[in-house]
Length: 168
Image (cartoon, rainbow, N blue to C red):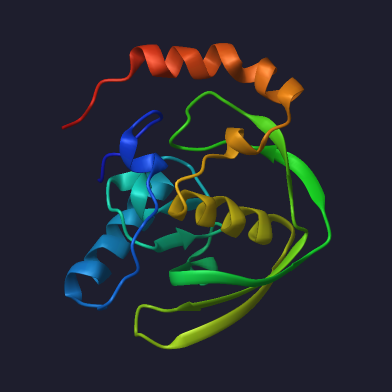
């Protein structure tokens, strides 16, 4: 199992770098990330959350193996609509809040075989992908909150900051 980095770990606030080569090590990381995500009862996990500053995430909103999705160097090409729903994050334990995101997205990425893929997503899958892509840009969900919502979680965020121990 990989160690999930928690806020305010510096790796979570850095822009991840593009992946140039899909090799055996990356495929191993993908497998370990799925195991770690399932162990943490998450529906998505981005590489920076396990200390890897690369543009890759794993997602499974269905809970079965057919729902597994790997996005390497993902880009949202188009986003439409607006939806508000509650989110949490394995890297921000104990904090949940309603977040506004696009309702539908069109994503372009590469799969673990190096094949380009295009994906239309809506609902929970669109929300999850947007959440994970935020991680690749060094952004956490609570940074998207309006001032009133941030005030509501400020104490929990401060506790995470006070409890943080640098893993280095």
